[in-house]
Amino acid sequence: MAATPRKNKTARRILAAGAGLVTVGALVAAMPSAGAAGDRSGGGHGHGHDKGQGRLVDVQLLSFNDLHGNLEPPTGSSGRLTHLNEDGTTRTIEGVGGVEYLATHLRQARQGHPYSITAAAGDMIGASPLVSGLFHDEPTIEALNRLDLDVTSVGNHEFDEGARELARMQNGGCHPTEGCFEKGKRFQGADFPYLAANVTNEKSGKPLLDPYFVWERNGVRIGFIGVTLEGTADIVSAEGIKGLKFGDEVETINKYAKVLERKGVKSIVALLHEGGLPASGAYNYDCDSPGPGNGISGPIVDIAKNVSPQVDALVTGHTHQAYACTIPDPAGKPRTVTSAASFGRLYTDTTLTYDRRTKDIVRTAVASANHVVSRDVKPARDMTRLIDRWKTLAAPIANRPVGHIAADIENPIDAYEKPLGDLIADAQLEGMAPADKGGAQLALMNPGGIRAPLSHKASGAEGDGVVTYGEAYTVQPFTNMMTAVDLTGAQLVTALQQQVSGPNQAAPKILQVSKGFTYTLDMTKTGADRVVVSSVRLNGEPIDPAKTYRVAMNEFLSGGGDGFTVLKEHKNKLVGASDLDMFTAYLTAHSSASAPLPVPAADRITVIK
Image (cartoon, rainbow, N blue to C red; front, side, top):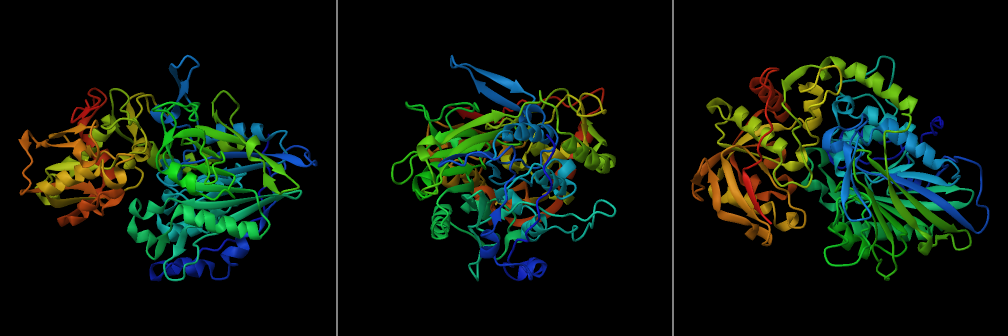
């Protein structure tokens, strides 16, 4: 099925958030107010023939989240899913995802559904593979336009390059320093609205982007409220979000649910870039199943329990997990909460039964399920052409070999210590160890900065085992600058404890460590006690709390990102090359076709479960 024509764009307002965002303000000074733009009605796609003129109308909601610019099929563990069999065993589904296949699946799913909406829950861009990231994610926005995305919330990664760049993603225009990437072509921006109800100007209190969007077709009206996680400021670069405030998700959603109700919109969906952790990693796990150890945990549970009963469904993201759960609203009524994993491997199909008389959703009739984006369908030709066009532009950089590996070096989401994490930490230590480069004695790497595995199988014509620059970029797309800093042994231990306590207690963020740095993590305990302090050693010697150590880490970590506030207390910072440059240099220096790099043993952190 061919893509529907591009919808007419409606300019969307993005407000200056202070002196640091003057460019944003200048870009949009002539645009309508956020409220005016947010109140416009969407035309919908109208796939199929008009039906459902009776009292009850089934509205199809197709949703996904955390695409992260994965236009090409993701490889290795990033391109897999776990399927739960009826007998309780599991099997791995290989080869899923890819926007060419996502497009085909969505277009097929829409057939026969005249009331069909496609929505997303943030992180559509950011931390993207090279074919999108090299061009500041213009290719992904173009692909989402062709996918007929109706609306999305912002995620934390939409702020990776700051509010100015997010404004350009929405409104179009060529990159301020690199210009237009294709001769004679100006980037058009997103056809769909980005919603950011809880991201406001610190001084004015006004939303950065539209807080809500109303979709309408033949009198059926569905309101969407979009928010990102309140903790976004802790996990993105501070420079790009100066002057912005990230508000409470529940308070914001409830506020705009009342606004929509006053406007006569009683059917409401929240698009929320925050999520949960189901008890099983299988995409088809029934997280409503009873019993101890079942169900879902994480931030989304308390959020869902407190979001106004006026909201009929929550589409979520951020945790890269798959679930279609029922969590009771404050009135005790069941409400669907969904997430479609990440990287375009799944999409969620939710049926919202709309009552024309009450103008509300019949909650008891809501049904949701996640569907695999398999590659056994014909790839969408328009997406193939789009990818090929951008790949041709990227090829001179992307295809350059930078190293060789003996086997897959994985980045498993459920492992505390990751083989690829060890490799990256070693590369950072080597890059910052020379006296004139910082004199680092150990390196720490945040797990969220590792975005994909290194796959042994060739992705193109380079040959099996060859690592290209494009593949290395996909692993470390942020291009963070490296730093070497002074920390005391006591501060180092505190950093380890912050992995599993405070904001990281519910979902630990285990730092990847360089060779020679070892310790024990006792997960049978709680909070900071999980770190066995007496076990922390550097090159076999116990860490001395009073001694000063030189530690390599990227600027995100040295700025206290991911809840590691103690790392901000460092002294004597020296800035080095980028993490990506150090990674590629290490691969080149330590591998060849005849002596490929072996898989790290991942034996530095002893875990007691």
